[in-house]
Length: 175
Image (cartoon, rainbow, N blue to C red; front, side):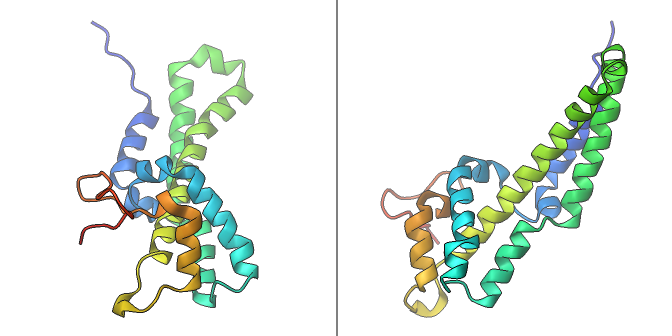
């Protein structure tokens, strides 16, 4: 019998997800997606009031800027995903997209745009967890850490190795 056609973009997306940390510079995109509202809210805070209010030092400000600047591997992966989607859609639906080239362009942009958004979200989530991590040496938490924990709450909880949040109080991770 006939074999079903598999768009090229499905294979590229699977390869991208298996190498997510190398491509996006972050880990666990699904955990970041679950906390997307809190991550966006906290990044807006870091770029706005925290930056102008003096809570961020120069190194932290640079980390925020770096998290918002996608790595070249993510940009190249998105370009490859666009090309694969474009060719895949043209091959799977040749008559439909031949007369609708603008629709083909928009359809091919969607997977690449999703990859860029998820990559940026994951990078920002990792940054927030790093900035709000407990300091070494038992020193009292900085004003930035206190403010991030109060504003960002659930986005800063570190998942346990089993993938679920550990403990029922305070969100402390088991070491």
